[in-house]
Length: 219
Image (cartoon, rainbow, N blue to C red; front, side, top):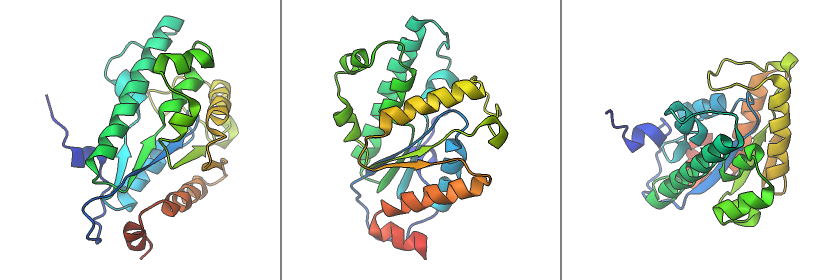
């Protein structure tokens, strides 16, 4: 079995010139429906931002990419979302506890599962013994990339993406409903140029970076 070192799994690639060795990490959710551009923006972040920014992989990719059965029955959907929630939570706890990073960019957050939940919202809170306010409190900000329509670039290039354009739009609306009341909720609409979407996301991320790392990034 190949062991992935934490630095390889999480760190952005640009060396930071600041002397800070301990950071109180802030978690930022990058969310959106299928095809919204989360993966592309996070890969850009890995190459552009400094080593004190961590990139957390998508929990659903870990679950389904690792062989968890992806079935459509309510039982299977609930089982997969429980697994995804706990993996997401523990990855975040790991990044927070290490204190090596000033920002943790999360490919989705714990509440994204509510958009896929096969039972009532109340059942979701009971299952995970939590509340919306408690989960909101985990994150400094939420950046919602809206899913593009078919004529604006929605595609199936990701082998994990099984949704049609209409299904993706419905999920995207559910995600909006889940996160819209977070105090630092930012919505980025699809644009004719994807680079415009990327630039808008980075402008928001920069606002929450530690000053020592922000100065390096802006230099």
